[in-house]
Length: 390
Image (cartoon, rainbow, N blue to C red; front, top):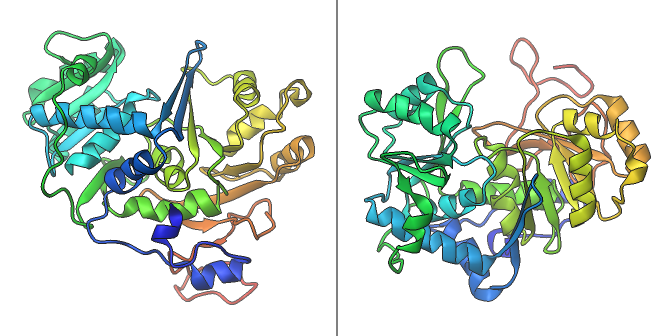
């Protein structure tokens, strides 16, 4: 799949990568139709998503399944009057319905606003009004839905509250029933221009209220680099990124680049982080690639790794915080796998990364991405010289 969107898709060195990596961006690109539905057309039984949870449940979804469920969701949303440019907040934790929902909204040209289940009434009121949110789809947990209900009197643009279950509060619509009763999906005559908004994320890290970051319709193509040249994925990969869907890390590591690479996204839906449980699922499901913050790896190496068969693991990547060299060395000693760091922001994809051709250096984020002009600056604003700290 990535060959369609790169002028050159195979590289033999970092220098080759920097010189020749160039995206091919078609007009009116739409990830849902051009990637998901295309896989469903050419390889309908190809595994797209393997969902598991901490209660032992497991479900596999092929690309044909993702197309079918996203079509049903899109038709249901159409019946509710949701269409191009409408803002829809999704508080779906790690439920499989997140993937049906985001692809469905892409098919309509609607804008998804992923949100964490930790939002309170105050947080919701601010977001609802700042983004003129039209609908909220959420996990049917009273700890979530009660906050949403409390925000309603101060959220005049909200027209629909949709619960995926198990609890359907009074005044809410039932997502599962909506899918079951949905008519055949009819693709809109016009969906998106490349500059149209795809995702809006509320990002913190500055003073005051969270700021809205708009990511456009071609943003998913920026994650070819993430999955294929940082996660090092291929069509037989089974990749786990440990992240809740309320954060952009989910679309970094559990959707766009991974499906462009033809890999299977592995989802572990859990309420509490237990290192031994993570190791057990890596072993049981033969996960081949893992991306997580360094803190996760610090907890994993405290376990007795000799109890687990991690021979399926091929690649591990880290982001989100500084890597302690001792964690790098110990994980490498125990598994033979080198942790490869990367860095990006909500407004970007990877700006710095450790590619497969570069030897990881503990304490270093890696080298600049060919997608950005990266300068290291001195305090006076000038680019530093080689060997100079900036």
